Image (cartoon, rainbow, N blue to C red; front, side, top):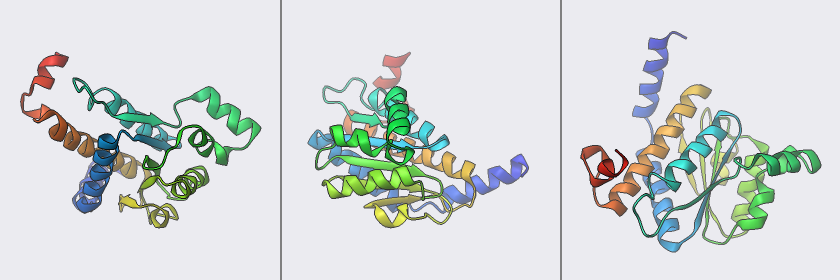
Length: 199
């Protein structure tokens, strides 16, 4: 695929993104924030990088200057525990095991899977649902099993993993901007005091 073809596919996929699903995800973030609940992200490979990136953005960017901050944890960031679980129990358990330590009813658990069929993500989502958490899934391709298992489904419709990863990160940025506007009272992209603080 040529760069111009990739750009066209990415733009097309973003233009067909169901923005109501993004709004539902933002609402899930808002409710978790206001209730003092924890938001968990998880994924494998590039999806894991997106999960980590999003958690970092909310720990700092969307929380900076607020007295009350977002509580957000990426389940694939603790490499020693991840490797111990994978080695001693199995790869399918790397996300569900830490949830058993921390999860509380009302928490928001977000699984990112391009195929929608990552077994370790699905197992953690099932556990979260059984224990009263709100669940969300970011998928690509057909949406896979994950699309049918979560309360909030955000779908990148292209049959392309890289486009799905780009769309998923854009979705997190959309939610981040929405939360910043809501709780900081202004848009950082429009010359806010937030911009002044970080320069």
